Image 1 (cartoon, rainbow, N blue to C red):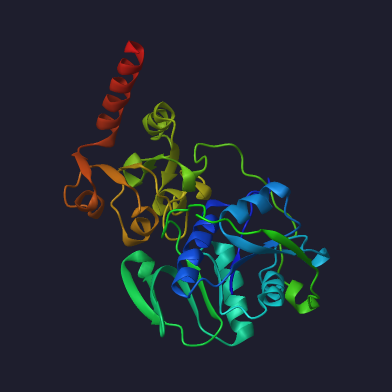
Image 2 (cartoon, one colour):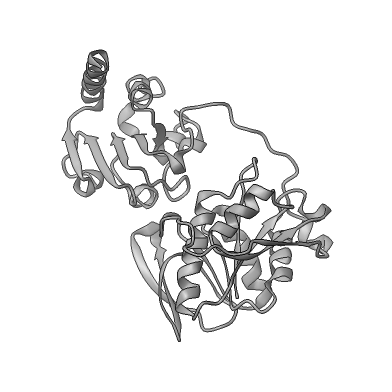
Amino acid sequence: MILVLVETTPAGEAVEVSREALTFARSLAAEGGGVPVDAVVVGEPSAELAATLAAYGVRRVHALTGEAFGSYSGAAWAAGVQDARGTSVVVMAAGTPRGNEVMAHVAAREGVAMAANVLSFGGLSPFVVTRQVVGGAALEEMRLADRPAVFTVAGHAVEAAPADEPGSGEVVVRSPAVAEADLVARVVSSEEPEPDLSGTLKSARVVVGAGRGAGSADGFAELVELTELLGGSLGVSRVVTSLGWRPHHEQVGQTGSRISPELYIPCGISGAIQHWAGCSTAKSILAINTDPDAPMVTKATYAVIGDLHEVVPAINAEIRRRHALE
C-alpha cells in the first residue's frame, strides 16, 4: 500500500500539490503492480473531499480526529500518519513546509531515511528517486533501501490528474493516541494576511515578478498596474522582502512560494539560484532587465533589455489601448 498525506484548504478542499502527490503515487503504484493508494487527512472529510480523493484513485481515506489534531503539530500529525500506515511500503506527501516536516518526523519514528522534493523515480528494485537539491540547481539520485520509503514530491513535478479508474474513497475515522511530547510545538493561533496582490501565487496563470530593480518601496506602481491589467498575481524576490519593500508572503523562491504559471514576467530580478528554484517550472518567462547577462535573462524564453520603469509603462499603455479597442 502507498499512503499519501493530503493537505486541505480552510474550506476543506484538497490542495493542488497534494493532488499532484496522489497522481505521482498512482504512477508508482502502477509500477508496483497496482498496489492500492490510501490517503490520510486531518479531520473528518466532507463528502466532496472524499469524492475528490476517490476520483484521484484513493481506495481508503484515513481521517485523523481528536483534540490532538485540532491545530497543526508536525510531530502529532506524524504520529497519526504512522498509526494509519499499516503495512504501507511507501509513505509520502507534497513537498510543502508541512509535508516536509511531517515526513521528517515519520522517517525519524520509523528509523529510515527521507528524500525531500522528489521529481521522479527510476524503478522499484532498488527503489531510486531523483530529487532537487541546492535550491533546484542540481539533481541527485537517492536510493531508498529501507521500508517504508518516505519522501515528499516537489511541487509541479507532475500535473494533477484524476485517475482513469476511481477508487472507492471509503472513509475510516481514526483517533490515535498522541503523546504530550508530540504537542510541545504546535500552532496556537493564526492570522489571515491582509488582502494583497500576491493572490494565489502557486496557482496563478500569470505572475509579475519584481526585484531590486524596482528601486524602492515606492517603485511598484507600474508593476501593480501590470499585474491588475493581466489579472495575475504579484511575486517578488527575496531582496525585496528583506528590504521591507513588500511583505514576505509575496516572495517567490526557495524560501518563498514555488510557482508554475503559464507566463512569468520577472522585472528587475537577476535570477539567483534561490529565486530560480521557485520559478523554473514556469511555462514561459519574459524577463525585463537592464543586464543582458543576468541569469534570469539568459534562462528566459524572451527578454527585453531595458529599465523596467520605462518598459513596463509602455506595456501597460499598449494593454490599455487594446482593451479600449475591444
